Length: 298
View 1: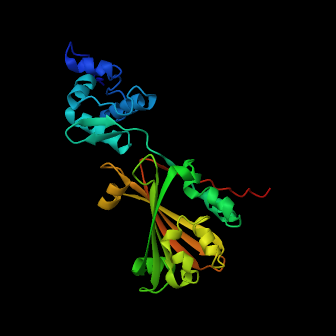
View 2 (view 1 turned 30 degrees about the vertical axis):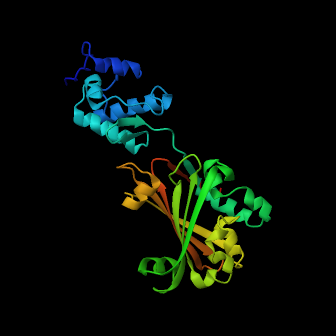
View 3 (view 1 turned 120 degrees about the vertical axis):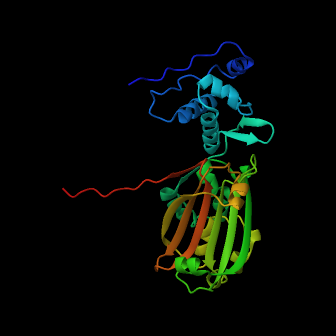
């Protein structure tokens, strides 16, 4: 089999001067690697970004420059830049070019321990519950680092939500929309759409008031004020393209998917008391699960 040679550097030209200023030529993009050549280029550029050779705010080389340095077609170069956008590493600015993004705040959500941590906090006094919350747990940020947004509305259960909550269609629900963002960024870290039976929540009028948010201790403590203890929380995870509204709100570049968690909270009597859809940008979210396995009897 004939292996294509690695393209040699062309002589002279301002494009090569620009590339040298940005950390040298793009090397190692060749046919011997099993990966698509555009992906090889994307990963090499990612390495330069992660190492700091291409610092945040740096203007990326043009498609022409990258095509000349790598020996790839403009189409392959365009695919490599698109891949960098999907990784959240660069962003295109109309009429100006493509720039290296500053690192985005990441969310590392350990749901297995997170839910028990939330339940344990329910029984703490208010001063302790005020010190931190679930978002701080997921990001390492402090309360002072965060901006919180909440909207409450009363809605009627549609067929899907009625089935999820095990109620009749048309049952009144309290719909809560939450998002939290870092004070250093405009885009929310996640968006949550929470649904609870309205008549259940109305037993404590404070739970109908969005101005009480963020509630110390979160939803589990809110349910505790109603005499409800959770037995389990079931998660269903999916990946999908964002809706136009989600892409704008979460500041997601084209091609980046969202991760969704359908969180179903079940109390100790087996009743579903909350269903929440949590939407997270796929380029800066990690979902971590650890499950303790029972040992075989010997």
